[in-house]
Length: 179
View 1 (cartoon, rainbow, N blue to C red):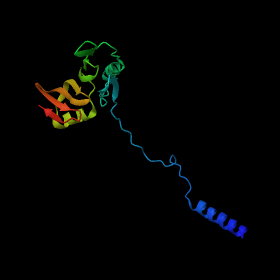
View 2: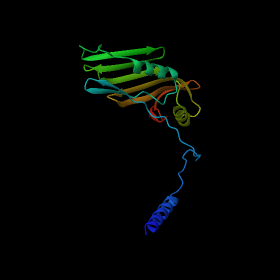
View 3: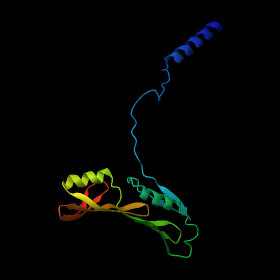
């Protein structure tokens, strides 16, 4: 009787083991994976609060990335103590980044302004679609955030066609805001 029970137990276990599918190797399937750039978020502790900085990630211009990296690496230390507001200004040849900290050392506002930047394709495409025959002759990029929220992100462009000039403002998607 014991041998019959053991035989049934072994057969029952073997059937359940054989019923399971073989493990799949997820690396064998060749599906195209989508790659997206996500915004970097830099958070620094300021007393009991946190400072949030969202660097511009759509721009392909290296001078913007270098200035933002320098700002991220900047250590405020105890310089802000004793002041109601503390202003940090970083400048390069064609741009500047100005940051304001409060009395606790929390980042409250960042304003970035750059001249003659490398425009994203969405901006170029949007402008040439809206204004065929016009050329972009001058551009300025303005980016502002307050308490970690993006307040302004726009391109001020100067267009030229023959002897006529026009000034417009577009967002980062190339949509006309003003002009």
